Figure (tube, rainbow, N blue to C red):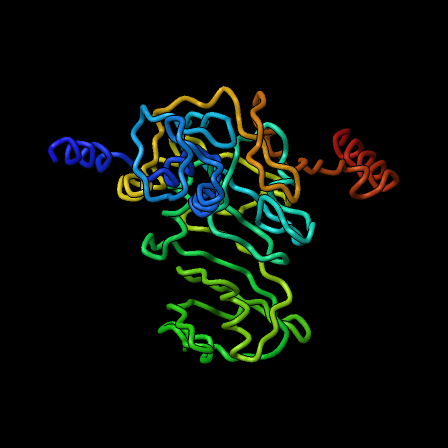
Length: 322
């Protein structure tokens, strides 16, 4: 009896295996649970079939015959998602994905939430599944801001009515801040902000008000801004900035670790349509975001023309002789 109790106490001080796999950047917790159920994961040489298992740091975890990669420092990236990409590692219909479009030399990344196929703008990517899960939770309280172009007409009073939330088709949406920015023909540009981010929330709420969304751009997620990051570009948040912006409460809840070194090797993205975990390869730093070109100031000759410039110069010389 005492031996069983000691074994139980030892295991209770560990972490769930799906959580450990996610924090290693191999997959999300949901994917980890699916891989375990498929018999692809073994602990200390024994295959497991249930994610209801706590593991300790010295336990040996193997996925498809390959050791679980060592966890690296918690990192966060800002990605400007273009329209037409699926926020997924693989798509059963063969559509292009965010992760296949990322540049080479990045660690295995997980998205913080998702953006729909035709939604563009800021998408947060991280190598830490615990951080991704924490930032997705409404309890974290981070505001998500969008710019929306929609066809139709609505009054500011109608938009103000969303501040207390709204129930649509049995789904309760939380408080929403919305205001009209400008009219553009038969369309309106709106500023839209919310803290929950339910599936298709912006389109469903505005559709309830008689508007058809035809462009949706996420411009910020919590303290992180899209700014002038070009479409398709990615930029890493510096570790010190990330630690400061998360704060102690969120970092502790996520189990973020900023003291670990960067991994010497990464888990590259799987091929499109493949559910296999990726193989390791050497890593290199991501390409820096290109700065916008500086606009050259036109010369006087270009601005007013060479003949006029010559006349002004002669007039100046005559005045100087006087």
